[in-house]
Length: 561
Ligand SMILES: Cc1cc2nc3c(=O)[nH]c(=O)nc-3n(C[C@H](O)[C@H](O)[C@H](O)COP(=O)(O)OP(=O)(O)OC[C@H]3O[C@@H](n4cnc5c(N)ncnc54)[C@H](O)[C@@H]3O)c2cc1C
Image (cartoon, rainbow, N blue to C red):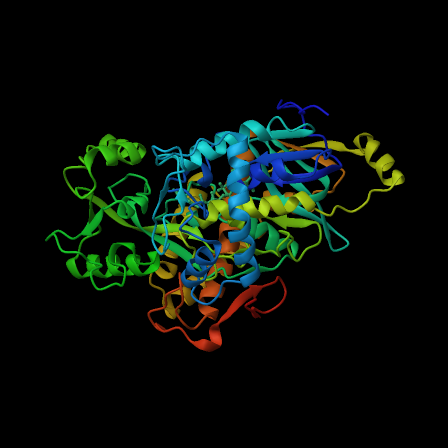
């Protein structure tokens, strides 16, 4: 089999062996690890290559040094996870991580090295050893380039950009395909399995380090299809995102503090001096300390002073960060740069087992969209890219349902029975109003379900979100999406396509925000990335995962030792 080209002709409606949704580290690695001989369709919402994976700066965690060992990596992970890490997921990650590093080296990943040729490693918060591998401060960029080059060469793979999955196809309790919006075309695609690698949900919040498509869409899709989602209340807020009026919250990697950067307020005092570990204390603690200090002083940022890092070392290790600061007329090696907390990583997601399988047969999830139980209530820095790789690897043993000869014949002839119709429906809501509603929701989410949460604000927003969903669900364009028969291909006009994209953005964000709020309200304690000012302590009875399934009340699941 050859790679199947990348043209803009309609995507063959299947049956594919596997549809992979998302082309970040998780989706690309999945494409590389799926067994040979499968026909794989890789779809990616973006037309560009933008993804959280590509934006990752700090690095990838793995034991590679002789003075380090997997037990220590496990202990650090479990410690950061604040009692909620599943032991089997942690063991899998720390044991498989060095093999994934070998695999990356084989693929040509050019990690930074020491003068003796050994792999260079840095220290990040809550790691007890230098174990974070990097390529300067553009590790994600280098990783995605290597994975993409190899994935696109995979025989039998078709990679299509600008294709958004709008619904999962569920038949007889099994996921067997996806509905996609491919430009102006809305169609169903059949497959033996679907892998969600749609990333996280930082963009549910107005202040975030994530790219725009990271708004938890995979979670909305999986939940609507009946798959369980877990631990949605746990969001990691990164303490140091660039804070400049009108500029995106560009991440200033923790590695900057690992190499000697220090947080300072306007008077030159450290706002984290009382925390064990100070500048390198866990991210949630640092974020809260910064917000407290900012609030007390009535300011919207704290300084990050890089003067403690030798100049040539800073230029060598952080060229992207320094360039970005200089583009904003900052002089990062001379003056502290303004930073503030921002939503960064979602520990919760679609619940998966060690084989990346969700609770819905035929549906798998990998990467930030998944909740493997590895991170518990808080992620250890740089474990997430490794999680993408380790769990994608597990899909090398994917168990696909057999397809009978009759079924194949049916699908071969299916093209003849597909009818094409044009859609002229338009939204009742203008593009401006839809955009404003999206922005407003993310601002409200930041205000009530951000670094500091409390019951009253979250309850009000939950009610408002639920009430806003009902009229939206009645929008004709969304009804058309939900009613489309599997035999239909629908062609939309350009204005309807734009409106439908925004309607899907809004309804999926509302659904995911509502799930997030329900989980935050349910957990009446504080732990890891979930801090409630009205319940500031961790309680032993809450040492359980939260679990949400459509049509069932929110429940808990015990932690696997
Ligand atoms: C700025 C930044 C720095 C980071 N630094 C580090 C680091 O140093 N180390 C580390 O371990 N982690 C880091 N992280 C976290 C890490 O990058 C992410 O957890 C990881 O890259 C997630 O990879 P992913 O493949 O799951 O998702 P992503 O890389 O976000 O990819 C998701 C893909 O899904 C697609 N998609 C989404 N919805 C749909 C849909 N409906 N239909 C079709 N396609 C869809 C998107 O277009 C995208 O291609 C960082 C994150 C950010 C934002």
